[in-house]
Every structure is written in C-alpha cells, then in structure tokens.
Image 1 (spheres, one colour):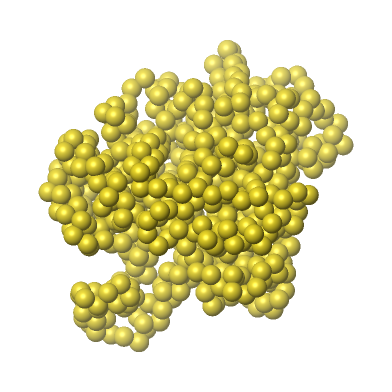
Image 2 (image 1 turned 90 degrees about the horizontal axis):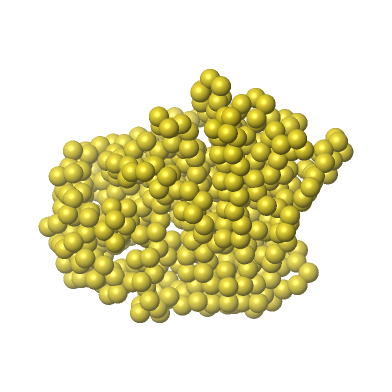
Amino acid sequence: MNAAQEHRGPDDEGTYEDPQRRISLGVRRLSIIDVAGGHQPLSNEDGTVWAILNGEIYNSPALQERLRARGHRFRSRADTETLVHLYEEYQEDLVHALKGMFAFAIWDERRGRLLLARDRFGEKPMFVQRSDRGLSFASELSALVGASGRTPDLDLDAMDMYMVLGYVPGPRTIVQGIEQLLPGRLLTWDAREDVIDVRPYWSARRSPPANHEAEEELTAETLRLLEQSVAGTLVSDVPVGIFLSGGVDSTLVAALVAAASARAPETFTVGYDVGQVSELAEARKAADQLGTVHHELVIDQASVARRVSVVLSALDQPLADPAVIPVHAVSELARRHVKVVVGGEGADELFGGYPRYRWLIRSTQVKRVLPERCAALGARALAFPPFGAQSARLADVIAPQTTRERHLDWVTARRRYARPQMYGPALRSRAGSEAALDSLAPHLDGFSGELGGDAFMQLDQRHWLPDDVLYKVDRAGMMNSLEIRTPYLAREVAEFANSVQATTHLSGYGKKLLRKALETYFPKERSRRRKTAFRVPGGHWLRGPLLPLLEHQLDGGTLVQEGFIDREFLRASMDRHAGGEDRTSILWPILAAGLWLDRYAGHS
C-alpha cells in the first residue's frame, strides 16, 4: 500500500505494527515541516497513541505551545505529533481545534480504538474498505485495490453516475466494496467489539443573517480573514509558490502572499498553443504588477496526447474534468522549484463565482410568470439551431423543470438524456436511472420549494467541490509530489462567506466581495475580469492530437469492448465533432473513462 502511494510522499516512509491487536499503520511523507525530525508514524511518550497524517495542520505551532503549557513534551515540530498530544487531551473532539487540510489516523492502544478523520471540505482524500480481512483505509483507491489481492468489480451504478456527472460522488467509489469517508466526518473503530461508527463534526451550510451589513464592512472582513488564512498556509520549512491564472481568485491570493512575504514569491501559470482560453498574458501582467518571480509553461499540441494519456489513466478514479490536464502540467512546472503552492480553489463556491447561480435565479423568476405550456414551447423553439449558444442557454432557463434538474443539466451539458443511445449492453439497464439527480438531494438540507442561489452554492460546496475540484487538485498535485494549499477553504473564511446573503455575492459579475477586496491591490478593470481559470481547448484537441486516443477506444478500448459504451454512438459522435459540432461534453468523459478502465483492467 505504501508503494502504491509513493508519489504522495517520496521523501520518507514509515510503518507501525501492534501485533497484539493486529493493527498496522503505513505512511509516505512529503517533508515540509521539521524535515529532519518529522518521521512518521509518531507517538506519545509511552508509545500508547500513534498517528499518521496526510496534509498539513496550519495552526500546529500555536497548538503545540498550548499543549506544552499543559505538560506535554514534544520531540519534534511536526504537526503529526501535535495530533497525538491533542488526542490525549480531547480524544475525537480534537478535530474542532484543527485548521488545515488533512486526512489522519490515530491508534489508541489502551482503548483498542482507531480514529480516522477527513478535513472539512475534503481537500485530502480517505478511502475505507470493510471486508472479512478487517478494516483497511488509504489516501487513494489504488492502494486498497492493490492490497486486496484481486481486482474488485466495478460499481455499475457509480459508473452511470460518473457518465452523467463526470465524477463519482462520495461516499461511493467506482468499485464495489470501497467507500469514501465524506468531508467533515470522523470514523471510529472499536477493535475489541469490531464496531464502526461514522459521524459528522462539521458541514458546509448556508446561513444568511437577518440583517444586511454594509458592503464596505463585509469587504474589510473578507480581507481580514483571507489575510489570516494566507498566513497560515505559508507555514512551511520549504519555499511556497503560487498558482496564478490572472483571474480574481488567484490574483487576490498572490497579492496577499506577496504582501506577507519577505521576498518575492514564485508564481506559476500554464497556457496553450491553440484555442482562445490561454491565460498567459493575464497571468504575466498580474505577476509583473506584483513583482513575483514568474514561470510559464505552454501545453503544445505535440505533447498533449502523451500527457492526457498518462494523467487520465493514472487517476485512482475516472474524472471527466479536462482541467486536470493543466493543473497537472502547472504542478509539474512548480515542482521543479517548490514543494508547496497555494491556489484559489473554493472561491467560486463560497463567494458566488459561477454564472449559473444567476441564471438559476432567473429561471425561478421566469417560472413564476410564464405558464408551463408556453415555457415548454419556447424552450423547444430556442433550442433549435441556428439560434446559437445564448438562445440554448435561455431555453434551459425557461424549460419546465425543477431547479434541481435544471442545475444538473446545466453542469453536465444534458448528458443524462444521451444515455439510451450512448450505453452498451453492460450499462443499458441504468440508462433511465435518476441516481445522479438523487445524489444532489442530501446536500440541499435546509432548503425546500424553488431553490435559489443559496441552495446551489451549498450544493456545490458539498458535492462538486470535494468530488471534482479538490479531487482534481489533490491528484494532479500529488502525482508530482506537490502539496497544494487552498486559503479560501479555511473554516473561518467559509463560515463567514456562508453567512453573507447570496444576493450580495452574486451582484455584478459575481464574487462581489472578492472583487472589492482585489481593488485594494489592483484597479477596477482587473477585478472585473470574467472567470476563465484552467479552461482547456478540449474541442481542438479532440479533433487533432487526441483523435488517435479516441480511435483506439473505438477499436480496442475496454469501455467499448466490454459493452459499457455503444460503438456506433461513439463513432457518430466523433464524426459529428470532426464535422464542426462541439461534442466535447460527450467525448471527453468517454475518453477519460476509457483510458482509466484500460489501465484498471490491465490492458494498457
């Protein structure tokens, strides 16, 4: 299991075994704090409590100071040792004191109890398997699969959800018998009674106040909390860099890091030699204004097929988000210079950055005044070519659906309706499944009736953010042994953002408070820049350098050969894309699943 995760920690590894209880802990370490003295696993003074940690506890120095005052003795400055002594004081309640991103395990020998915990938003992963061999856990699915001695069967319901959503939502995984520990959850296992208990300790929740505060006060509080969070993410014994796209989120983080740093920080960005989504010019301009040491990488068409094939096949679960390719590329670039970077993930979900939030509110307003029959006729007319993309979006707004259905169709480009033609015999029975739609409902607790911006910001924080965005960032970074930290996801920042009215966040271009905060460092024209971060020229690539990969899937890929995807449907989709129709939303998920499945089945 350690060997399967060497990329997550190439600097060191360690194990602990309790033969009496038949407990084993293993860990790979990326050495960032107390490089020489932080070897894991770490224990208390008498060796009765042991801990392993993936991630970083940003407030570890302050916690160690408090614990020393209570009589605890430390052998290192490592945050893993902080967990040990914090557990001695508070047992499982220790999680409430932690600031950071983490997945950890603590073994309490005296009580015969194992504690697993995952951070509040799921920045760090945790997979759990219960079998007749006992309880196993790991940071990546691949480690559990490799240790099981056999290749687990695919979960066909999870595969169907992947084809609709583009990712597998927790607690499910793509294989049978293994689950994800959800963000903000604790798992305890009583070794004496062989009893497992899972419970939440925190959850993202929108809780708007009764009174509106002035915009200036909200902006000042946003800046104050982000300054504190950035200071925490800079705690490191090795240099820390910045992912910089030139957009609002990353530029604000870069400005805060630069202001808090004694020397010019290093920034990293990625661009392309084709298409209209390259961010090199905007990132370069922001870097020049901030005075950073700036690095750029261009993903050219000559290299994209190799990178796509390597990255998508190496993921422990399939992911249809094309942005994993540039995140991997910029991580590879950054790792040549630093071990740690900070990024802007979470800003859109917490501060209202996605345009669809505003469109979904409009759809609710239309539904109140437009009869359902008129809405249906208008939607069909507007969706008909050659009215174009804007009219198709308006058709989505007025179509007679629930807002939950509208949200799903918006973010998935209506893939669920293609399933009867897309699926081969292995998946055909799932073509009418509503599992993907149903997976959204548990994350909308507290909301009923027509759902607005508040509801979908909460949904994205609990569903899309951990299972797509943070999954993508963690795996792309860890493939390159790079730790990516996210200041926007600090608990204090998140709870503040979730207490602000959605109408405040969504006014103007969205992310109103972040844009106002950025004006502290930059003129208004930069704060008004539209969202483009980590988009890719996927349509161009699928007509050019990635076409041979699609052809392989068509002729010899496991996905088609074993009947998951219909061959004729794939051929027709490729032909239509080659002819100028954009079928990226269909072809990319198929390619991503195909490359992953070829590797999983041992055919690549």
